[in-house]
Image 1 (cartoon, helix red, strand yellow):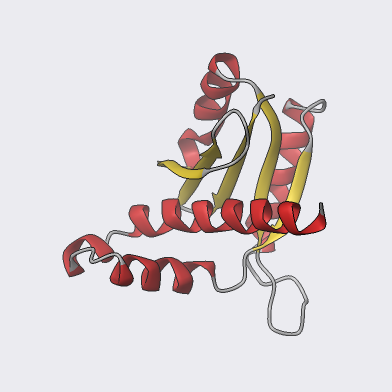
Image 2 (cartoon, one colour):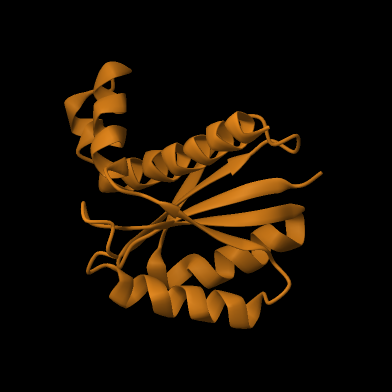
Length: 140
């Protein structure tokens, strides 16, 4: 069994999270710049077995895609061109940045560290992945 990789794609930064090989626990992996994502993915896929890539897809309260799709959709198209055999799913990422920020407060993360947008992006990717895993368990 391989891992599930979660991507919180942003115009500047990309938060990444991953499961353990048994797909039980979601863990923050890293945050890379949007320019570095393709090299990172190439290296990661060469080193790890990945069964699924989960990409956060931002929606508005009315369930319509948000403005962020203007840079996420090109990323998704390129991903599918480069990795056509890799299963790819979209996950609603509404409120994940706010949840990530509150999670860091609840965990006692210092104010200075909470202001680090790279940390928030990585935690957001973890929340997206954890939500997916919980939904998967619920459906069983």
